[in-house]
Image 1: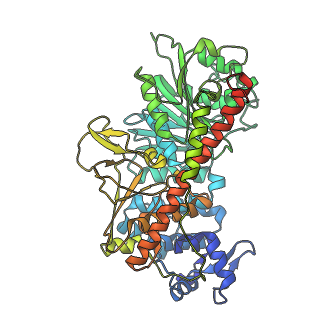
Image 2: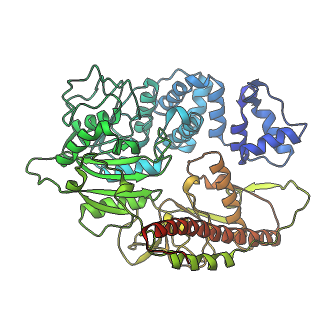
Image 3: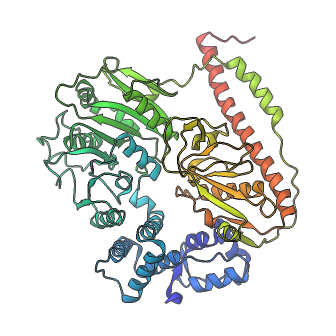
Length: 602
């Protein structure tokens, strides 16, 4: 069966733990690279067995996991348009249900489910499926899904996602009973399988939520949703008199406001709705009447601006709208929270919690009076209401800081040499040999306490730990020389070698503790950074599998030489980033100051 399995360049890159460009270079540089046996001229397919043999012959082979081999066989068993059906059948096998797959493939799926765990095995297949069809599936990034469910307080309650896709948001909900509806029948079935494999009591229906509501008349503790954006054919003509439009008939070009009201119709009084919205929905003129009615009723509680890519359906940075269905005897609220969170998802959650608890708000967030929003435009764009800093206040200070930073720019001394092919290994192999230990931060930490916590934002900004937690079982304590990296390739944070011990490892972080006589930590940090850069170039937002990270096999003395150069490059990067940031702010501060009269040219 193995000889029938075909792989493309992306598959080969993943197996060999390199970028796709490396595979393209191999095809050009090596005459013995396997010839295509299928596919197209722009996307050729190769025999998996031939590729594996070539990688072995050239010292680049990374053992193909059983899960990866299963995935390639699944892809080879059908065309990409019907692959979703096959993935759902895999889930059925793992659930112990009957499936339309041949006996040999069924036995292989069961064996892998037994070895990996059924939910982990199916998650692995789903991740590959989402990577392959990312433009069509438009799955919500897991970190954003976690933020939405945290703000919606979904844990332990009944939860609905009326545009559930393949279930990414519902998987993070921890609801006691969850429901979903999805237009695509195959995606709905796949979602049902995913949720049941993760132990959820779930009801997932296929169909058009707006035109054919599968949960009409049912209300939930919370509703979370990332609906399709900018749909002209959402049902305007058929649904003109629908009772869901409590706050006004959604304009034909404002499908998102139809989804907002659909979600509110399905939440219990006092329950929360967290819905992804395109940023333009905050200010488009046709929707201002509905926005005004949502404000007057006290239903709209917060607008949180995120980063480009938080909603794959949008090319720009989307917003999260947080709504609360008014309950009897509620006092009408007088204000709304606005947050410019960007990539700082922890800031978004912190600001929402502080707002609800009437505590001090963090930076880049502000409470805005509803009466101040009810003007002619009813523009709810957060950037118009939340100022991050006074533009001219620090011009002179910044100009002095710019000069200091420029003096600190230093590059390592690196010389050109004839290119050489290095034998490679991976962290999984090094961990088995005892050269490195890999640990992950807990998903949640107790808030408050005396122990410092290194957070994902601390790593990104290369600063001292700012979090706090109390002592509890399972905490990962950082030691001097540990390498810390983000769990997500797309975080933008560079791996760091810790110079101080004592802090606790925060969530979404990985810790690598090396035997310094066998693996230099600075060398490892440089290799991990190179891996993240390659993943980012290919648009990867997936979680890092630490065992698959590759690095050259080098003697420890040579590792240390490389490690020193890597460390100097990372310091240069930090300095250049600071220079870029202060330069942008300095130009804005200078222009604004010259125009508003607070600065004068000599």
